[in-house]
Image (cartoon, rainbow, N blue to C red):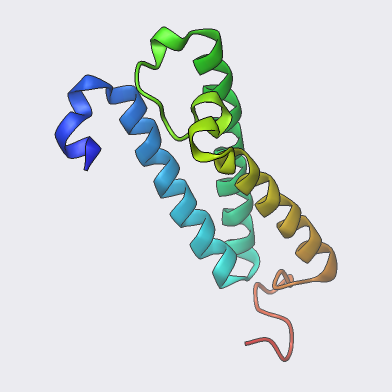
Length: 116
């Protein structure tokens, strides 16, 4: 809604929030699907999300005037209870754990035997 009505007021903030939303959806779908390709997509999405939070969070604290409106990544996700910082870390840790156990990342891209 903000993008449709207020985009001109803070285009960078709203564009970054839209990118963050798209990355969250991509990561969620990839995490849910399983398989080798989905695993790689999930790692990439979680990594992009983490880098975005760290870069934008640092820039928003170093130069607050550059971000007149908060984004989901501003201040490391302060306005969102730091969830934008914590989620990609948890996602990457979960992916690391499941990769070690072979959770859906077989070489042929399929799910482990007996998996749904």
